[in-house]
Image 1 (cartoon, rainbow, N blue to C red):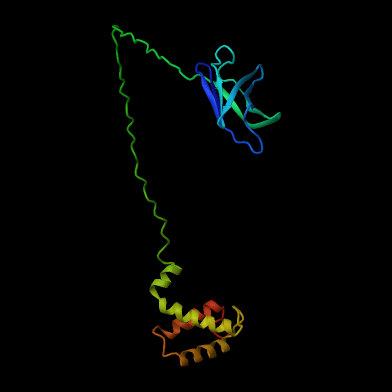
Image 2: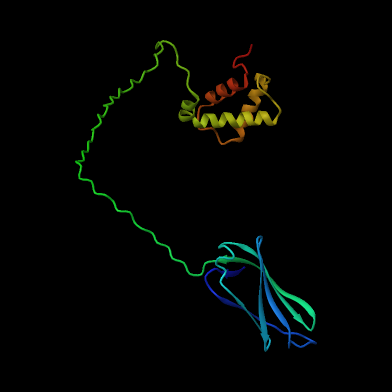
Length: 217
């Protein structure tokens, strides 16, 4: 965007070249258009150099005004408009003054008060762990699964292997009769090198899991 000034004279300058014609006796002028006023500045062309003086615009166009400006050249009665641009009017030289205000020093007495806040003392009461009521000692306590896993891990392993054999044979819980169960146990003990736990415990746990009665009905 081209800048025009309210407080400065300047020259608009452009290099001109023409083909199949002579620049002698040609006419050059700069047209400035605004919403309120249009200005025309005449210039000259010498040695392919166009010079157009632009005077100060103070009192003619206000600062911050924008508009359109373009160059007109007439060569041998032929009209040309070789250049066009938007423009803004500014002030070239300016000065700003900022005055610091004086601060009045007060001579009045100043009183500062700080109030100390009371801190609340929080007393925490330790929670008393309540133990579950113990059952009578004359009743047998059922073992938890975690206890069985800790005490008899080998027993559970052997039982799981026997249950896996039944699942492969398509035998479900409560459908295994005692005779077939004993055959499975016999083959299992025969093929293995021998369990490290009591066979009776394995048989009892296996029968209990499969729902097979230990004693013939």
